[in-house]
Image (cartoon, rainbow, N blue to C red; front, side, top):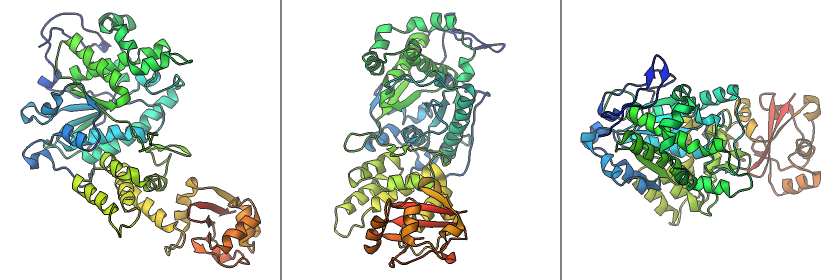
Length: 491
């Protein structure tokens, strides 16, 4: 099918192609999983909404599913629609890259994990590629300026954090295929890039990259027109990502690369290298839309910054609350994109929203529950629901110290001495804690019934703090209305 031989490892050294003979794609020969820094796991899984391949008798068409749910932007070849449901060809191997620019992935990265999960659920195999090498450069796509360089310690810490998140999420789908082997693997591209020599790379790969084509990529054009311009390092990023696809196609039998719509240029760079260097067909690219709100603005940022997937950077409670607050105009579309609910159930929710008697935020609650469960598991969802109910002003749920501390990082807090708090008036405490700027503002809301102490409405302006008000002798929770809260730690 093609006419080049690749010698990949020779006593630990990486060599590039140099002779001409018949090339046999890895998808046609036994696949050997790399032993270095790869992770393959099979953990507990939730009940799938798509039945395993072995129970369905035929492979669900994943491209059709993605298109129906609004998760398909472009594909490099229409033939992918047929290949993905061709049982005789066997399962596809699909990869998505994640550069370790932070210790956690964020909501924008989640779409890649969701699309990989759909491939898994339809009987295919997922490859998550951590950019231990490319992360040292930084992808210029969608960026107005060059990323700051990461030191080695930070890079390794970020890689470990991202691998943990990816493993946790993809392992939920680990037993959905007909084979007993794991249907996902995590690789690090530094494991092959560390042996590549610049002169060899330029000679054997760079010669196939046309500068005109590289400059025509949208991400490059935008940066070249900006004041900051673009460094040569960033300019070569698309070639490095393209070579990753070539390496995985040849050595791991990976057929498909997926990414956001801003990755189109980098993905097609890979399919072109495979076609030119390996002279092989069967490499496909697929992109999904960026996550936008109905007004066209980017979805995935809060007032405090990115919506992180790691519970150490954003609590399950706050993650849940973010999705619970999605406007009606966006909730149905996000249910299709961000959850695995079947379309019939989503359509029923959409119809219910238009009927009298619909309970507000029912669809939002379903969205928040499904996506929190997917990212943080049942324990994370339970924690978020418990905190949500307990922290609702007027809630009858008894507060405890652990519940209040669980949301302390997500709301303002302060520390006050026990002797200063005891017998202090609720008005004075509201100002001392920073809940209000003035006593007059506190009195005004109190008269309107809007001040709560430990979720109980305060009706009397003369109310003073008693020992039994202090939860477990450690904290107080003050609320002004439904959203403004402050945790008072007693020292």
